[in-house]
Image (cartoon, rainbow, N blue to C red; front, side):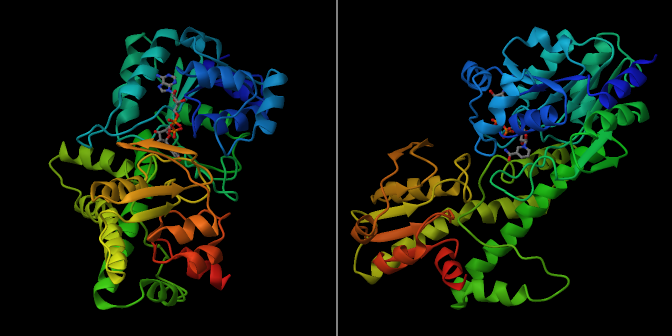
Length: 430
Ligand SMILES: NC(=O)c1ccc[n+]([C@@H]2O[C@H](COP(=O)([O-])OP(=O)(O)OC[C@H]3O[C@@H](n4cnc5c(N)ncnc54)[C@H](O)[C@@H]3O)[C@@H](O)[C@H]2O)c1
């Protein structure tokens, strides 16, 4: 039997074993879905804490409850290890390691390279390797394929390669790993067939595209689309502020148009591991081809100016009480990058806190999901949220609109309020 036919048969009988490299926000939910579909899963991570927690059935990812993970670990469906040499044991490998930016906003592909190197050392004929990490177009063929060729393997005959972008949206109760359509771009027709067979039992719907490059660009288009549109409404928030018009009223009315308009909302700026980061992978790639991706640059510029815009709004509010930012107490509510998650990576709330501190404000914060904040020179612990703590602040800033908070109380008690998310009015409406 050919290696391709063997892998397809193992997928159909669920006797294939899957390796997942990187057990973070993307890798752990994927490992759980692979196991639920019937595969045995070995998770590989360089963090001993992550490996120990997973082997204990304890999840460090909010979207994966321990009560879901624990039975899969107990029944032997999922195990975790730091031993990369064991990659040769499994039939398919999904790579889910981070792809951050360097200080100069260039792609930092060191994690992908380390994972690819580990795969290249352990790879054997009859394995499928799927890159899931968001990266620039061309990565799969430029970074992964040559190392497999280097081992003497033929792509599409001995080993099978695809790019399949992870689309997980942390905190989204409706769209999760399984029911979000999964794009797959194989390096050859056989690669596509094998990876589609392996993933078919795991995802409700597969979306085949003709190449890894197309799949890489799908992910970058999706996140660039969000970044550009968020940049546009953030600029509209600044425009409305200058004109004395309520931007939320304008957006709500525009959104009644049944065609040709898609609602995006302004806020404190971009956060998280994806939207502020991914478009720069494309911009970097295109710079190398002598093309400047202007929409990406402008959106990034507008979005990254938003924390300073909101800090100016705080200064204006304090001014109404004849107070300066220096010496005033400011309570920031919500520091995670978006509602109902505990992730503070790239969170614009951290920039707001830092800018206020730099201007001499006495800043405290409350976030039900983030007990301590140690980022970017900011080092604070979450204070409790009560009518007392709200009323005691000279100004309150709502940076993230977590669902569980009592916005009616905040609106009633705050002496001065800057609501970057329109949380108060939305709560009042609903
Ligand atoms: N977080 C999201 O919402 C999201 C959504 C879609 C796509 N993505 C993309 O998925 C990828 C992973 O992101 P994430 O948020 O899951 O990252 P993460 O930081 O949550 O997890 C990555 C994990 O990989 C481990 N790791 C790092 N290097 C490793 C190596 N060489 N070998 C084994 N393990 C290693 C880390 O210890 C960590 O546990 C990124 O490319 C990201 O852009 C993320």
